[in-house]
Structure formats: C-alpha cells, structure tokens
Image (cartoon, rainbow, N blue to C red):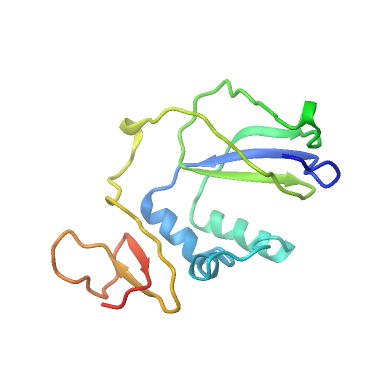
Length: 165
C-alpha cells in the first residue's frame, strides 16, 4: 500500500467461471503453475512475452472465456490520500477466477473483492475439498468417495499430495 514510484499505472480486471475439470486442465498447462505449487511459489511466473502468449493460447485452446469486470483504469501511487482505490461494478457477473492485468507492468500490494455467493449458478458439483500440500516428493492422486486408498487411474478432480500411497 506504500508504493510511491513503482506502482502499476493502470489495471484491468477479468473474471472466468471455470468448472473443476477446466481449472485442473488449465493449471496443468499454464507456464510455471505446477512448479509454483510444488516448490512453494516462484516469483516471476508469466512475465515474459512468450509465457504470456502461452497462457493466452492455453486459455483459448481450453475455450475459457474471460469477462471484463473493470476496463483499463488508472491507479495512483501509495501516498496516504491516494493509496486505496474503490471500484463499484454496475453489472452482476458470476465467476470463480479473477485475472488482474497490469499496464504496462507492476503489482498490487493487496486486493479485496466483495460479492455474493450464487450457488444456484454452479454448473456441476465440486469435490468436498481440494487440498494442496507440498513436500520434497509429490504424487498426483484422485479423490475417492470410498475408504479405499486412491487408485492411480485418471480422474477429474486431482489432488497434489506429498504423501505416497
């Protein structure tokens, strides 16, 4: 909240409404996302023109539609009177993934979004949980609704776990 010389001069916001299977497919193919999950975060993912183009191509190939929430809007530096920005959206939209676009680049120290849950608009049931834990080794396993250990067969809702079964 105190960036006074290197703030992002403009941002825009976009929203996508992905099914769990679309989200799994997207995470598996976006540049650097799996490595970021497995290794506790990696700075700079998606910052090169090639990585941005790969991410855009992946979204297009998965038929992911991004709705514009907020058009390109100027931001002010982090001085006390100008550091907080409020934007009211006049149209109701439904989604579960937010994309922040910085122009030309930069970052946002914090972002808070307010909305209302719209459970009647969910297209398909989601798993009860989707935990992600990290460790030195990792196995991808499916969720199971039984007490049996999970199989290694492909399944729509994957879990990244550091435990070996």
